[in-house]
Amino acid sequence: MSDELYLNVFICAAGLLLHIMMKWAEYRSSIQKLGLSKYLGEVPAQTAVAVIGSVAAFTVTHAMEWMNPGMALACGYMGNSVAENLTKKFMDGKP
Image 1 (tube, rainbow, N blue to C red):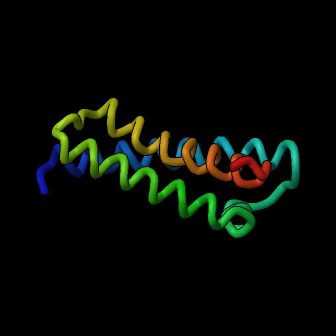
Image 2: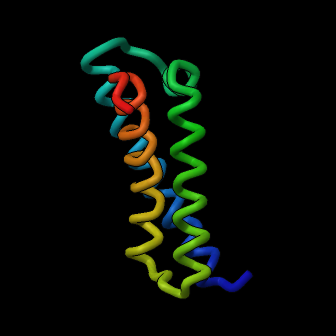
């Protein structure tokens, strides 16, 4: 892999971690003060969807040759947003 690809993967991971940390902070302030590992244990499906969403978005963007540092960050951050939106949709009982 090229240095540029490594950098974009790192940026994507940073975006994903940023969004997960924001959700964890929100959870701690409104629901329950949990450590990070216990929080991830509370939301395992959401975390898995976030990671898979980020990997899928990154892979498609890279394959389409649209990858740049901004897009890498968006792929990481968006993966968690997709997970949150899907979780809310299914928890609310909407079709």
